Length: 145
Image 1 (cartoon, rainbow, N blue to C red):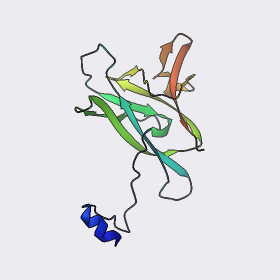
Image 2 (image 1 turned 60 degrees about the vertical axis):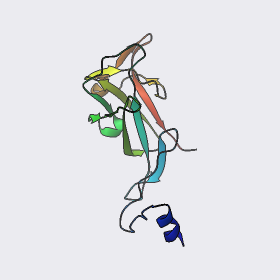
Image 3 (image 1 turned 120 degrees about the horizontal axis):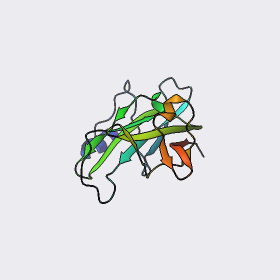
Image 4 (image 1 turned 180 degrees about the horizontal axis):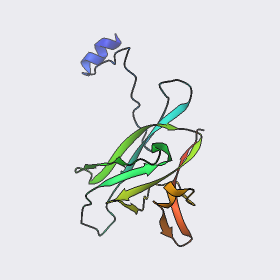
């Protein structure tokens, strides 16, 4: 019966051997177990938009953080929403992660961050931004309820 309903809605049922890809929740999070089944992980959409009043589009927008081992991940431009975004998977929960958004290779403010933290270590120091209270990096709280 479910197969017939899926056919009616033109949905394709996932095969048993392929992993389910989580659909993001409205806040950009989706929690699931990683493929090894040992630790819980979640997926997060990182999104950046040109600040108000700016019209020059950047050449590149990237995210870098503790959940990527400080490797740069490129955000793609969505011309319909005029945003740059990427969904990252397998981010460990019950951790506080540090990250930065890079626009044309330079740290940029992320209005969707969970807070600010002191940079810890050389990886974080190279991506820090200056605030009224000194250098900071962004926080991503990966907590469960």
